[in-house]
Image (tube, rainbow, N blue to C red; front, side, top):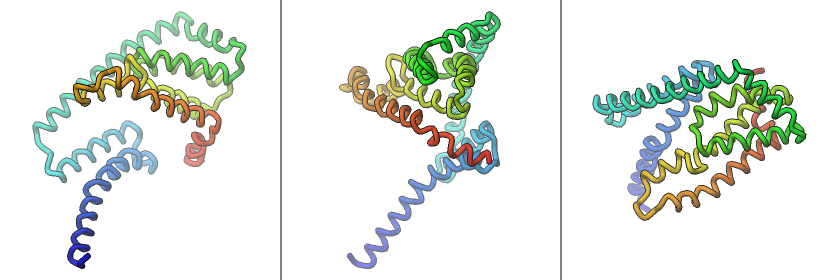
Length: 232
């Protein structure tokens, strides 16, 4: 290959690197990097991510008033929906706790003759079933306050227990009938791809998530190693 063509190819590859790899890395660093470096809290990191997105849009020449307006409108709609779900879940949790429902659930689950990991499996199964029919935000706001004391009573590390719950909830995005990922795929799929096709297609991915969940349960250091290092 002539020198000129090699140089042109190298320039093209460098251009693709700068435009395809660095922007996502910059966006990831703006969110996760600021958290790990102690520059921002989780909520503040979300704002850093939004600022990084605006900067990237400006660099790509896509920052227009109409786009910002539409993004603000969608953000307001999603935020309002989340707050309404949170409000309803808070009302339910408050009444349920006031009526000693949490104590009833704790006594019921802790009284199961399955051992600590058997009780954990029961909790995860309940979350899996709930994830098929309920929004994950509602599940977190209703179930986590009830399940967290159970995890403490069973002697599980709180960080490990919380991550296990979150990994389990990831499957709610794939388990029909109420699965966000399936809705998204159906919205962009060709007309000949039916919902039944997508239901069958997600089965291997649910299996992979179950495998990942089992690995994290069997090897808890995969979850607790980094937080322990950061806390020290």
